[in-house]
Amino acid sequence: MPRVLTRIATASLAALIVLCLAWELWLAPLRPGGSLVALKALPLALPLPGVLAGRRYTYQWSSLLILAYFAEGATRAWAESGIGRTLALAEVALSLVFFAAAVSYARLTRASA
Image (tube, rainbow, N blue to C red):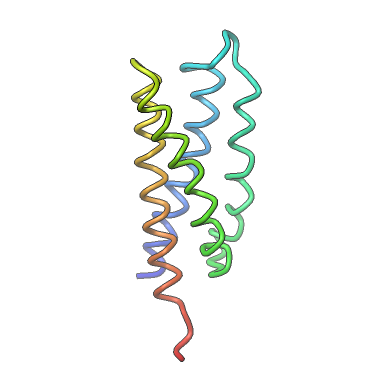
């Protein structure tokens, strides 16, 4: 089961990185031609090696990091329309999938008391 959760977490994290870059550079940037808001994808790259390696501590802290992306997606889904809203809802969905996988992985791999 931890292997499946690692795959789910890795896939959702990678998809969220791609979504953030595509959103802010090409699909619906805040400014024509893209903006520096695309740098929001950089913090998502930090936990990727630890998630791939199955480090429990990485799953724990990245589950807190991902909540910022959930909040941003929820806010922009409320405030935007059209493709921006669709992309924001995708961000919410991917962040929820990663959060669920990360928390489940951390619970499954915790040491017995």
